[in-house]
Length: 328
Image 1 (cartoon, rainbow, N blue to C red):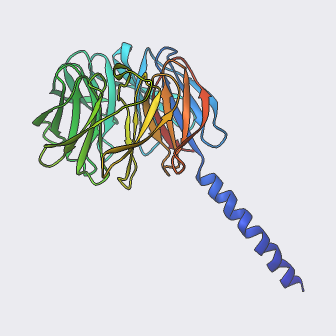
Image 2 (image 1 turned 180 degrees about the vertical axis):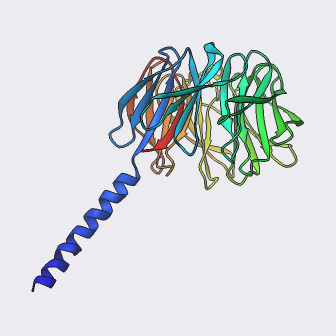
Image 3 (image 1 turned 120 degrees about the vertical axis):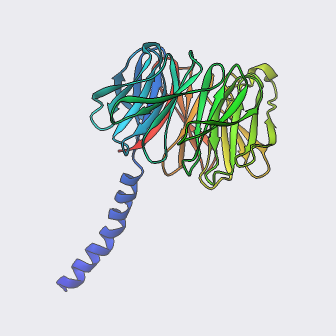
């Protein structure tokens, strides 16, 4: 009788334990750089509330994870450096060097080095994040911005806003191997998970150019039309593509929309209304949620990826710019 009772208790408790484990597995920390507040807001992905605020240097913009998720690195653009903070304690760890006005960083797939675009000197700086030293500088076009890394770690793509090009760079030799002309003011470069395509957003051109990685040929361009919104207000910036390479989400700036695009057909399937001047995007690691930084409404929109619906708006600091998500 006792053994049966114990078995019953275990049978009832097991689903609860599994539910708790699943719930814990979905808990993430969302780090949002606030360009005008000189802070990083930390959001709990379960409660969808700001749980901490980290004080940074001046004008924090691009933000990434490093050191196996132990560090969050942010570009303190007006201080001409990058800053490292502990993702668990939120304590300042150290500074990393860069060129003037660093904007967007990306890590090599091995975890080191880091590549950062320096808007003011037309260079991409290569930084050893553990030694804290500059490895080399790579000349690129005028006003370098976006940084994309191929999944195999072989190719780095940088976009130059004034030259209107995507520069394909050998990530090991640091040599520029090709330049692809895109539309005006390219912002973000994003590889598909299979590495076969690079999607480059053009803020003023109002398009996303899809480039075949191996041949560097332009496969096509995605245009956007939103009823009641003028063309000049549709300014593509952030691009995120699901791991299954089926769906792309594209932030459209002052249009206050995120476009949902079928990767295979390159057709826009819908537009999601978010906050004002939506800039960058970040998935949770399980891709269940997508967070958008909305610069002029000073908030973050939460998108449920499966239903493709906006579920919440979260107030953060002034001019949220970059976003990255780490496990708790």
